[in-house]
Image 1 (cartoon, rainbow, N blue to C red):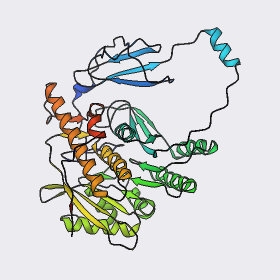
Image 2 (tube, rainbow, N blue to C red; image 1 turned 60 degrees about the horizontal axis):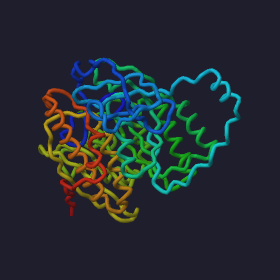
Image 3 (cartoon, rainbow, N blue to C red; image 1 turned 90 degrees about the vertical axis):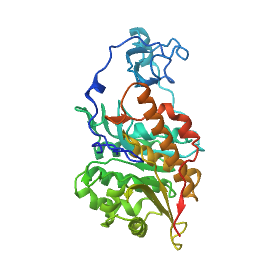
Image 4 (tube, rainbow, N blue to C red; image 1 turned 90 degrees about the horizontal axis):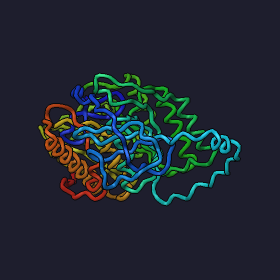
Length: 403
């Protein structure tokens, strides 16, 4: 299953669907003091430590720890707020003229604007995509299409949904300050036609500033025969989004929706990729397709408009567990590695899949060590604990080219 928002589901491979999590996961231990050093000063930040309280790395800090708790497995989440100013100092700050903003530095690394969902707890959507992209060298400026307390596989969730006007307001704020130069745009879950149409306006706006913008689209529509968005979104993706995308990363069900083709064989998958190429994108990756009891990634890319596509597959080892956030993570890894290997999508896909598999194995091992049965419920991925696997993966899943 996939949550309403981020892409998720049974990730025996690359996608995660999130059946309702164990109710015990919602039980929160009591608050206790925090002495952790926060990241560089912010008005509000979430500082995640490893299991328990890391006294080696913790130092006294100024912000007030509003809440700090941990479980046997989950990272400690600390909500940090700046200390309240004295009335005198606050008055002096208000009288003081604000200094002029410094011009932005020229960013020599890739810059990504991901429009995706966001959770306070858990790793799906932007929480699953931003950190890996930063580890792979990108400056990332995320826009949260929704902001929820937790993913919707839990019994309850709360939060807010960004509408199209609010999205455009953010873009105009960047434009007014000449801050709209991005190398990449990444989109994930989008729940309404109006918001998707605004996203298309964002694509046009960003390309008016940088015509070489790479638009990576994860068309989150559904999985395993079930739609998770309104039906009328499908035609908008077919007619408007696919033609302007640089790279598409659908799953098996989504590629069937976008092409109208049934995928029951590898040749069906290759034919579907060709159909999508003819509509616009040069790179198409079916991130997970269950064909003859094998879980496959099928990739296809065109070096030039005139040349036929080069196509390949990667067989993905099955892991008998369910995870949340792996679909979003997969697309982020594909974006990151394809930027490092722009003319070698096979290499990029090998690194992305191998990285994901190492992270999932670590997740299962950590749950087992904590006394949980990994097959009993949906697992939150161990993203922060898998930095080495993201930054320097060992290739364990190899691409095989189609002739």
